[in-house]
Length: 212
Image: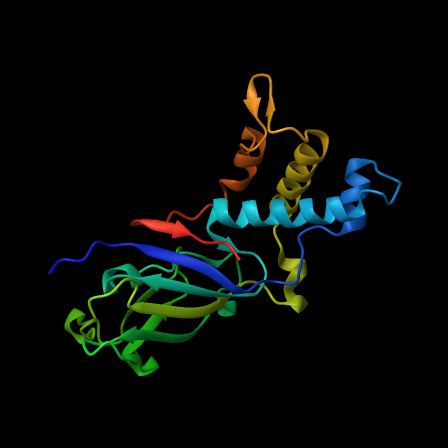
């Protein structure tokens, strides 16, 4: 029977690297005291998470798990590297077969197009019939992969992303209430969207983002 297509994405191992350091954020905010250090660190994490989710990118190396209902939904990965395509590696593709037993699909059966945005997975001989039959269950397919810049590659981080991070941190620090007359603080400002749209990757199909 036909399956309803859906995907989910979760971060199994988050990045330890940050777009902005605490010292840089405090300089931007003109803060010269330490009382708010923990709060500012939280804002740095929040801003980076919002940027990655809005753009569908992994800025720094993180391990991700994408779950899919059908093989069609594996064609595009929901989050790819911002730059330096060699930083993307697919660790495994697992699926539940018709006996509801989890199997690992051999890496020789598929190729990864790292240069496309979003990255693509396809059968190595480009024959759709090579996909294994699946169990009748929710998310029978699980793709584990890594994407994002390594510690030695942080100098490659686009400056636009860093500036967007500063602007988001500033907005949340200065406006601590959920609503200000005329706008919602939770919305990404148009100035930030203007900066981020250069790196925004469109993904296709029904998707659901699940945070850490």
